[in-house]
Amino acid sequence: SNSSQHNNIHNNVTISLLDREYPVDNLTTITPTILSKVDRHLHNQYQHPIEIIKRRIVSYFSHKWVDSNGDPLFKSFDNFSPVVSLEQNFDSLRVPLDHVTRSKSDNYYINNQFMLRAHTSAHQRDTIALGHSQFLVTGDVYRRDEIDTKHYPVFHQMEGVELFTNEELFGNEQGSLFDPLKEETEEKQAEHSLETVLAIEKNLKYKLESLMQHLFGNNLQMRWSGTYFPFTHPSYELEIYWNDKWLEVLGSGVMRQHILVAGGKGSKAGYAFGLGLERLAMILFGIPDIRLFWSKDRRFIDQFINLQENSSLNYKPFSLQPPAMRDMSFWINNGEFEMNDFHEIVRDEGEEWIENVELLDEYQSPETRRKSLCFRITYRCMERTLLGEEIQELHTRITDRLQKEMSVSIR
Ligand code: FA5
Ligand code: MG
Image 1 (cartoon, rainbow, N blue to C red):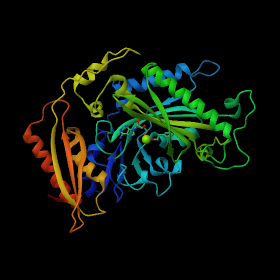
Image 2: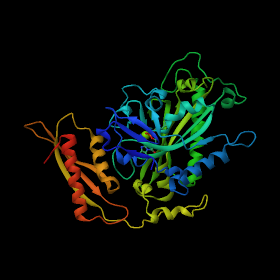
Image 3: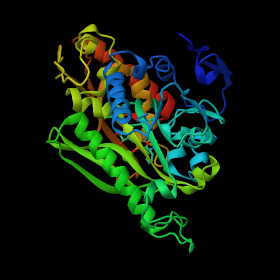
Image 4: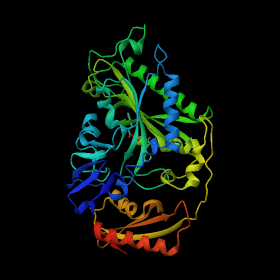
């Protein structure tokens, strides 16, 4: 393993990760559990479902979208390091300094200079600066997030970027990429003309809808909605109807022009998107729980080993073990309790045994004004039935750490 830690990360001076040493400081939030995921490279592990979906998308783009010589338009990258600077993850995209997505409770910071990337958008500017105008970047991304069957602190994204010249976007028609008036509105950025935005939106939505139909067939139900990202305007997300629910599979939009300028391509305009690969693989193979992707159990892995290109497969649960629920209630100090820190401790102790953490109840004492929270933790291991004592022991370890590290008092 090339990712390791020296003693307890937070009491120590350095973290060693992918053959480099990083000094620890007061921003460090990375944990041993997370460090142990960095060298898994699921997206490059041949015939792993995440690798299969990556290859199908890359293959779709390179067959369907070609230049006048018949060569693929999009260049694909899948080995950029997940260790990026804060500058790459946030500033290169001009995420404002006070934006919520920078918060310590949302990210795996290595220290005040480096972090595990929170999205593949961290590579947009630098890949443009390398001279690419159409590209895909696949990688593992890391976020402190809540725990359920659709969210995991490590997941995989594929970024797509396409930049257009005036001629590429409008062909022979009259059109102009840029707006001489330079006014930002709800429909467009200051630099762009309205026709630019409409043409880019059409191109982006057409390519992504065709991709989804290629992956899932024509009976698919999908819907677009408007959303917000600091690095695109306007922005759109796509949801797919699956198992009686709408599941968000991607974010996208017209790229903020300053990113192109910083990458040396200010004369073009373009779009970007970020696909959630676990979500797509769950839909494609009927995988019910996101934790399964991390399973080393042959009964999971072997189901995909001989899958032929473009053929379909419905994942067969090898043993759906019964879940076990345990509740915990504790008093918190108002204003001091950070939900993601709570989830982090549960995850760090429980690892792959935690299926779901749900807030059941909130209560405020009328006398002391103190708040009490009640959570239900669902324990379930993918590979085997957990013993009652094992669960109780883990539940106690979690409770102990919460008391020590979050100054809550158990009721
Ligand atoms: C982003 O990460 C943006 N960088 C996407 C983007 C790229 C927007 C380029 C504009 C231009 P978001 O946080 O919504 O956006 O994540 C994108 C997708 O990743 C989601 O639609 C979802 O499919 C997936 N995703 C997000 N969080 C998780 C998680 N914890 N576990 C699994 N998948 C997730
Ligand atoms: Mg989103």
